Amino acid sequence: MGITKVLCGLIIKDQQILICRRKPEKSLGGYWEFPGGKLEEGETYEECLARELKEELDLRVTVKNHFKTVIYQYDQKTIELISYRCETEDAVIKLVDHDQIEWIEVPDLLKWTLASADVPIAEALIEAYKLSK
Image (cartoon, rainbow, N blue to C red; front, top):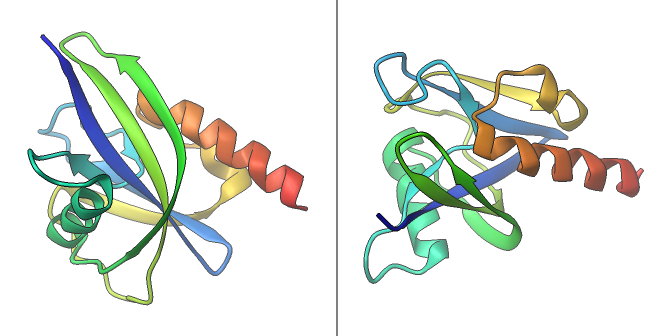
């Protein structure tokens, strides 16, 4: 079994970052995550992330720069979670794969029950936030 490549968007707007809660019936249901999805054959990372955010949240984003990559072994599979900073001007979000969203302050990320693969990205974001102050 290989590694599944998953892209996630770090969408920051008005000094807050978007996190989404997975629907209870999905794998990792109830956990919060940075939104995104699986890379499909022939896609670039940027194309994948833009497509997934459009499909899952009806959100148009501009994919900016790579932030951090994490390889994480869950019980059933290994994922390579590749995060990119993104920007959006959209104000309305439609929930498809998630049952809730929150815009939160970056320093508060670890107060939420994040999916395990997302935690190192959250920690790096918090550290980068501290350094930027």
